[in-house]
Length: 452
Image (cartoon, rainbow, N blue to C red; front, side):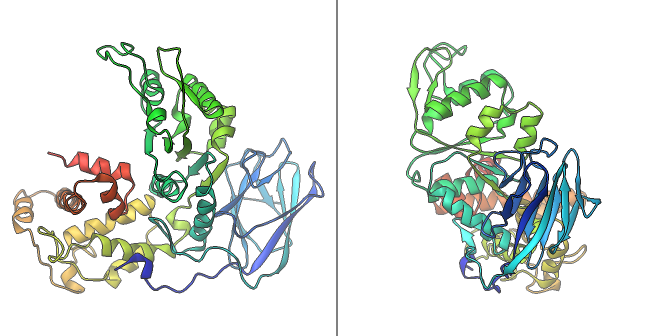
């Protein structure tokens, strides 16, 4: 089934427009309207990257966030130093409907309802490239990502593990003016300052023991395209300093040389952490922060967009099902649609691993035929038919504990899936990753994991 044609009711857009009026503090008199087209959350704080920026020194860089609901604002304190109080009561999360006084630091904001809005201009699409979602939160992300893709500004994508940060970075590249150029990934958690330095900027001949030739770094490899830097706050201070110069001047210098090389590279960064907090803690240079976070997207966790769970589950079930007519070695003949009992379980789960955890859960259930504990797919729909009895039988004969046996079956499923999709695309990893809906690096890791 094509994910683009799945039929779901349109999510309801916000019907109330809010504004915040500063009634106390150094910013008294300022008025901020909550734009429903902004991405999932409106950040309030002293950081220049916050949508609502205050001058109050007692307000944290990212103090609180506001999210639009149908008739309310959802407030969340972002572990601020001085806390958030609503009508005098300290809160970590809460709902605002209008008329409340919100105190942060020495600033007091009054929440006002402007009007009922007949409609909103938020995107009604269900996908942006390979990113999927039908929730209001993801529609806002798609609208912002589309605008960012049309530019070349450095962009930071933040979110929990498994929310799809790298995939969104790939899609922004693919949808932008640099789509014909390379997309290169650097993992900022690489250990060793020298290794990161050489990887990013390259090196001259004989700089590295045993390497007699000069090497181009990732900046040069990404020339004309996009360089994704994962976890920039993990880089050493010296490498961060060199990054500032590279972004500011569009030029790099290979390690061990005096030669300057001009590069035309768009930089996208991804991070699980709060980059503002990393600046406060001294782990990320402030001047680098300002250069990297020109555009900013926060990917919401799956638990904050629960209406996406059935939509994504149906999509992954369709994509990961391997009927015998489509593959030479399927593991399990699965029902054509996800069984209702399994979908109900998925909708109740909190998904701490987010979309990646949901996708892996679908793969595991397809591999094992398991729905509930002790229940198989045969109890709900089609009979359980192991189409590769030799593999499953071999695993069963090992008499492993259930979790280990299930993991072995899942590994065989992944191995077969990776081999199949690679074969379908002539061994081209980029096209195979696109077809599988996975980020290029994650698919590459699976390919390397099962390479023999």
